[in-house]
Length: 101
Image (tube, rainbow, N blue to C red):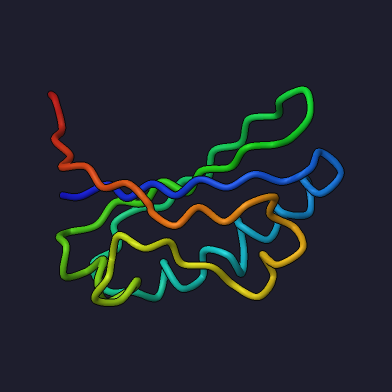
C-alpha cells in the first residue's frame, strides 16, 4: 500500500469554504479512481493561515498514476484552487505503508 500526501494552505477567511470543497468536489476524483483505498483530510489552523493535507491510500503506484498521470509525484490542482490557495507546491509525498497489528 502507498500513502500519498498533498499539502496546501489558505487564509483563515477561506478555510471553512476550502474545507467543504475538499470534502466534496476536491476529493471526488480520488473516490472515482480504481485502487484508491481511503481519503482523509487534515486541517490545522495557525495564527495567520490554515493548512490542509489530503492523505490518501492506494493499492499501488499504478493506481496513483491512474489518478495523477505518469508524473505521479506532481501535485494535482483544480480551477477552484486558484485565488484560494496561498501557494502551489509542485510535488506531493509518497510513502510505503504498513499496518501493525
